[in-house]
Length: 255
Image (tube, rainbow, N blue to C red; front, side, top):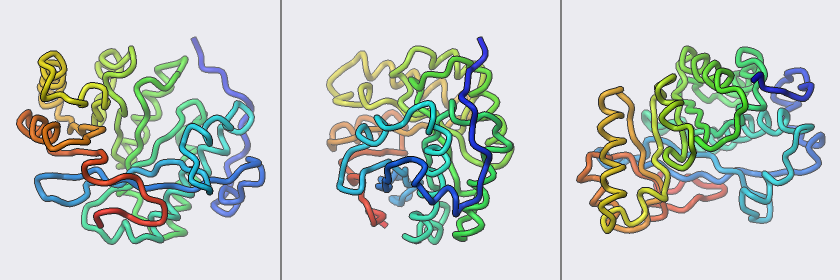
């Protein structure tokens, strides 16, 4: 089945994407670190959508529909790059900016990336520090379209990631067709993993497969030292969760 898209707006420059009047709502970004426990430094900061008055991502995403999805996706990229550059993320050695993207908003990867690259140039952010992640459960009616986006982004030197791995239904099938740079294990599998042998077995299997495929693994949702220690014991050294830092607006926690 071919993915059906509403007629997208023509690609525009940073100024147009920063002007959110067409969206009828504004938003900001919070940043949460993905920690590298081997170096005890941030490997990346994920940009997470937030409302201007502290509203969570769900409140903002509820306003996204077929008529504004393209504009919202473009605006998120520009906003994330602008704010990250302003906070000096690019000054941190080897630290990436992770941006969530909506695959159904990307109608042609080579065209839809233009505003992203222009934003990097405008705000002085190195494009090779970008990482794009998509949730495994994100509804995409044409998997080949998502694979095409991933391959294009990878060829451009961006890191690619599958978020919430293990939460959806197409994870292994997707992984068989495309191997991203990063797999982010869903928090339902990492939560209290030290207490659950079944969860531990599943996570260990994901780690084994990832090593065979030369994919790095991020453990999401880490909240306790026991979870951290169990995951480190399994060889996972990239962690994200409240144990390290909550998302912050206007700051890079643990910088």
